Structures are given as structure tokens and as C-alpha cells.
Amino acid sequence: DEYGDCECYCDGSYQGKLPFDDGVPEGFCHNGPGGGAEQCPDMGGFTCANPFTVNWVYNSAYTGAQFGGPSPGDSGPPPGGSTSDEYGDCECYCDGSYQGKLPFDDGVPEGFCHNGPGGGAEQCPDMGGFTCANPFTVNWVYNSAYTGAQFGGPSPGDSGPPPGGSTSDEYGDCE
Image (cartoon, rainbow, N blue to C red; front, side, top):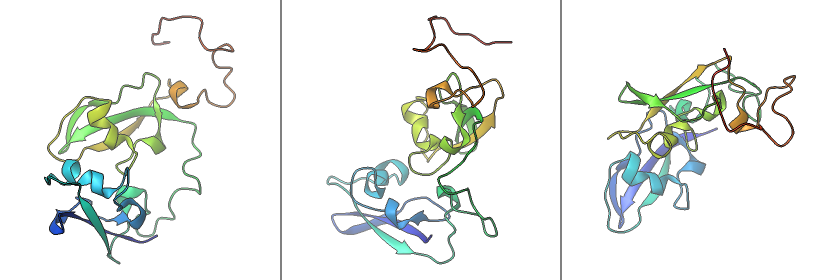
């Protein structure tokens, strides 16, 4: 995979690049929905009266670590992402300071809790209600008590809830 900078432009004038120290894949840096252009005001802190446009610039030194790219010498995740059926908390951090965790009572898979597009870091302001002047970072913390019900759990071999889901509207910790 190739990674580069995603440059933000307002009415054709260069504003700066999105703050990914190790680059973004070219597919992220586009002008359509969910693309880099939508990230210019939030992640870049840039302002423009009109929609931003973006330009991707390849950089051979980047590994894309923030986008799930392998660290140098790392073979990366298996094809199709994680095969883990483990769940945990996705913690939100602003400039290294813990803000709280995303509100999933029964955990999230590790693959959800990442700093790239569509990952947990993007959910910190929306789902968590946290604010930060800079992009959030996230950390996944395993919790053996979680079954990941909100993410298609329970784990294989677990009988899970009765057909049709739980018959109770009360929730608590099983200790």
C-alpha cells in the first residue's frame, strides 16, 4: 500500500495538510462523502466558505501506521482484518489526556478501536460527546467479561441470549 499527505485547499488556495504523521492511503484523500475533504475543518482546523477540495501527494517514507498499515517489518493484520472474537473498551484521548470511553456496554472489537477513518477516534466527539481541539486518539483495552453483543457477539461457543434477544430490560455486571 502507498501512503501520502492529504492537502486541503479552499477555492484553490493551499490551507495545509491533514495531521497524519505517517500518511494516508490515496483512497482516503478524496472530495466525496467520508473523504479527506470533509476532514479539513475538523481535523485540520481550516475554515472555508465553500467546500474544501483535497489533493493526495505520495510520500515513500510513510507506512500508514495510523491507517492500519504495518509498522516497518510488521506483516500487518490478516486479510479481512482481525479474526479475534475478543472485546474491550475503546478509550478516547485528547492530546494524550484520557477523556472517557465510547458508550458500548458490552465492548467493541479491537479492530473498531483505531485512529483511521471509520474508527473509534472518529466516534469520540459524536458517540462519546467529548471535545478536543486536535484529533482524538484511541486505545483499546481488553475486558474478558464482554461478549460484544452490539457488534454481532456472543463469542463462538457461547450460548448467548435466548432467541429474539434478552427477555429482560435490566442490565448489570455479572460477577
